Amino acid sequence: MTGDTRHEMCAGTGDAGCGVTVCMPAWCLATVLLVLATLMVGAQGASAADHPASPERAAPGRREPDPRRSGSLDMSPALQAMQADDNQNPAQLWVASGRERWRAECTSCHGEVERAMRGVAARYPARDASSGRVLTLNQRIRACRGRAGGADVAGRDGAESEPVLALQALVGLQSRGLPILPGRDAMSDAFASQGEHLFKRRMGALELSCADCHEARAGLRLGGSVIPQGHPTGYPLYRLEWQGLGSLGRRLRACVVGVRAMPFAPDSDEALALEVYLSRRAAGMVMDAPGLRP
Image (cartoon, rainbow, N blue to C red):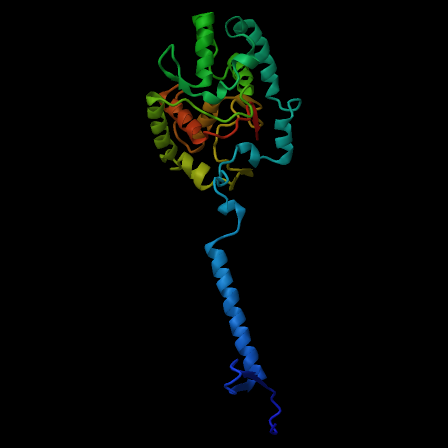
């Protein structure tokens, strides 16, 4: 060994008969080994990226999470608990009234509401066989009461009347926990197409569309409240703002007025088209009627 204090590592060629020995400084050999280890780790990382091990992505038949959210999920925990508890949800007052009306007006034709109306609300809007028209559940209840009670009942009790909302809340309760599956036929398809156009059309002095708020800005806050995605999972529902129960039609008119536009007339084709489209947009989501909202 010379006066150089650096250590050397020597390795044979592996051929016992060759007798050739390669010597290099220890620091040089360590560097080579470090480079080789880095290359091996990089190769393993690339392989993992090409073949992800996550069961969420790799398992066949798994669905991506549904990005849609019910407006109830945007409420405070206290309001969510109030909606979930039938003893606290104020909408249950209308359900109790609707149950009395059902016994007096509907049982003779339809039987017990729990059996006859199971899943019915989840299928509306739908085409009515007797009239040939596409109807919302609210309209269907009014039409049925009109046939049974005559023109006086049909003219007196509108969409937001207590008897109609009470029966709608009761019928809606029979679909709680079930997926929304609105009717599909050529006439409903035409209304859905018109409704989609209205949903995306800018209107009013503010030049805003439904989609501007409930799609592009969903999840942001407006006036202290979270902007919901606008899925009609809970109607009819009790709004703290209204201090009462209301239909989806009432909420749509309030939204249109909010952008400083002329609201659609109740029971107009435009109002119906929006409800048909919103139900299609929420298809498969779980109903939580009668709901509660701020």
